[in-house]
Length: 95
Image (tube, rainbow, N blue to C red; front, side, top):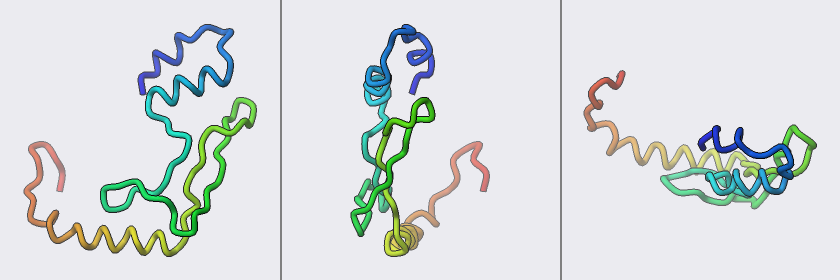
């Protein structure tokens, strides 16, 4: 997100207009879990509402992950390890 585009908004910009700018720059209305290279909904389907500190209005829904979601993410990480472990580090990358 380019912060300068947010800073240059006129003072009369409403919260809804600011949220539209955030959405334009990639802030989604709902965030799932990033597992196995894809965004997925939480297994139990629960989300919590993240609110803007400006006036406590809803900003985004965030996955309320359970232990089953953590297990799914760990399984995906362990499965990916087999292919990742043989990759050489990129120049300038720390091991």
